Image 1: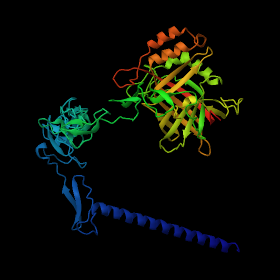
Image 2 (image 1 turned 180 degrees about the vertical axis):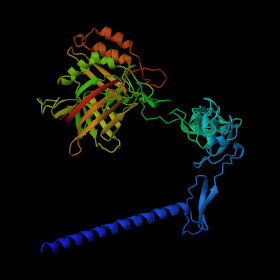
Image 3 (image 1 turned 45 degrees about the horizontal axis):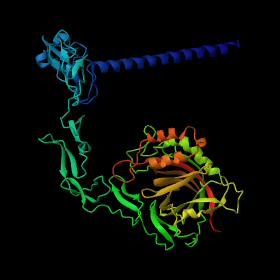
Length: 564
């Protein structure tokens, strides 16, 4: 049969396959048996083929530090000897049971603690022999120490030591700052400023030592500088703890026979105008008399004195608005008396600014405004700057009455740059200007001028033909300067301040026509009589004038002599 050969081949292959499968299973079984034998050998003899001293595991929970010795693994028996706490046996799990702790003791975190006693490192944990292996919380409020030097009366709460109150570090010395430092405890830093005795001639220190006499110490020191708060004294210096000065007072002589010099302790030199006979040096005048600080005579006859040869600076302005300032505040008033401790009016002033006659604006502002815009009246103020500088150096500023020049009769003098003829009434027979500020400075665009000894007179004319002249004493000016691209002054805006005597002010009010006033002049006079005087013009310690501030604005002007 032909099919027999393939059948025989199939039978042979199946047989071989069976033999092969049987061989693989046998090998696996042999390997498993070998592994089990090795593991068993590790358990039974863990030090097989290991050197002595090799770490091993003898699988005994009651030994420690197991080592191979002579092919055998063995360890040191676990000790439960806790000294006074007792001696116990191994619990079979690598520890000692509670029954090993002696009665009346606890064994906590390796420490023996007697019943009722705190743990050595935490007084807020106690030994309770009923629970010998765990700590028990001490009662709340038990004293403890939180290791913070800046707390006192520390106490236990739920097993924790909580901080108590801060320590009392006050040393009883008023000039020390008492505090607590975490490392140093209470410290006492001296504050020498607290020992200032307001005496510039003593060296003031705080001694924090706590020794007898400690605290503020003031020692005379003649090397210190001082000021006796009297500007009329010279060379103030310390001597034996006192501020003294030289016997020679401050020199206030201005060389002007028409002023009486005096020195005020707070304001310094004051120059009070007198009205004595004088000599103006002109042979063409008679009856020379001091007037507002200048010696002025009367011409013997019209034209007896030669005409003034006048020339004006090309830098000038004309005042276009003038009103009484609104209170003694910045931008509306000036410090007339140079005293920062005083200001006026009460309740509406600050920074030493003076404007006692603030309410006078209700009565005279309208009159001033009408005079400024009426070309036929005399209240046209012009200001001339003679060789001005912008770096703080002094130069001269002149104030003139003027009128619109015939060369430009229709010029709008409230808005345009007009030509003005300076009136001859501005000059004495010797051609000296009567309103002049020789100490004018400009720094950072701010102009300052005037002070004690300077005046600013102005004359108001009315439609009834009457006129009145008012004089500001101790006149001063502070204003913002406007310059063009060439550095030429083309504008001025600021404040004119000074003091007016009550008599002069009443004279002005009574000269104003009633139709200019909102109420009868007698009522205004009564009001003026009750305005406090706040300026001491003559330095005798008594106020004799009232401060006033006039806010102004000015535009460019061209000045011409009156005779051209």
